[in-house]
Image (cartoon, rainbow, N blue to C red; front, side, top):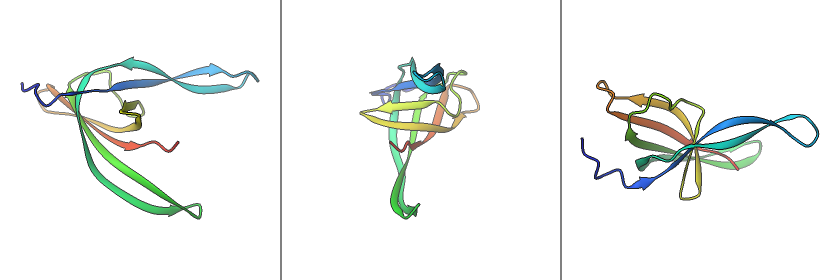
Length: 105
């Protein structure tokens, strides 16, 4: 196992439902873990949605395998928040590849 490429510390967050001041449920993001990972930008695109120009960047994050990482969690790296779209383990369950996209602010 080569760990030399895992040089980025990322923060993975999970959603937690809490009650807001009006009593309605709101989603907050709670820190789940801080693994070492390799972060690579894969692609980007610009498109029109709701009469405004939007952009989306796709990232691939490679880290050691963990069974508790699922789609829908968020990854924060250097101030950029990414949503995990698909966690893809290798066949020996040594590595986990996270396919992510940017989260709109």
